[in-house]
Image 1 (tube, rainbow, N blue to C red):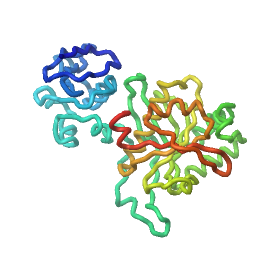
Image 2: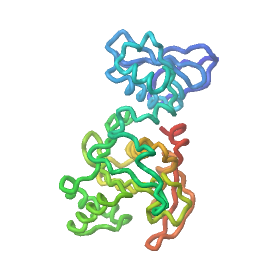
Image 3: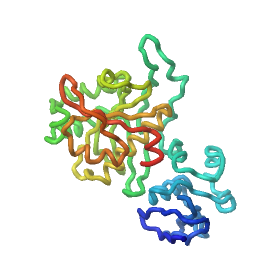
Length: 321
């Protein structure tokens, strides 16, 4: 039996037979979808103005329909779009699998992904040499469900110190970070993180407004390494949301999903993300499962009891994003 799906934001796609369903209704000029069998749909061009970015149109279609696995584009509809050659060269054809689409850097990644030539194995270190740190903005993606753009940029002491100090002195942040230090000490902390080759300190933004501080670190060089069997390109995450008006599940999904996406895009050999939050951080644990991050076990650092949390690349791209 066929199911006709009209385009609500989170309409799940059911399994149908091989007949096509009615097209999804969209706003004027926006591409519409004709749903097919087996979690697939055809992205239709319209007689109106074409979307400025075909990549963004594909992103929006996948985001509106979380169970959609494949988008099909007809040559006759799209071959004149300026993004068409890039799409075909990257994917090899006009059939766009969700899990493959989101593993391409497209316009989201602000620098080239790391290559093996940049990260030869260093016997004296026992792990690969790490690439030089990027600078400036490193990731930007319009979050269709949220209606805002999430961005990541490397922290700058002069630009960010005042807000960083304010965030660290918030009671809910100080409870877990335990770094409600004077400004001079926090300035030194930023400098140390910028100089540390295994840590990338970042500011998160929504629509250009800073709201939180994040760190991505190479787990093999981190204090976490002795507590689990790390792989060479495992990447860890530390996180802090400073602004009160960006708390809640819809924002967590955007920034934690975007941060995870950046980590996987920037190093294609990263297959796992790890976190080690304090074991009683219940606010955080309520959100992690939605982003494919599993709480595995508790363990003891010298300074705190933590939980080992892990996410898998394959699961993230096949089930989460």
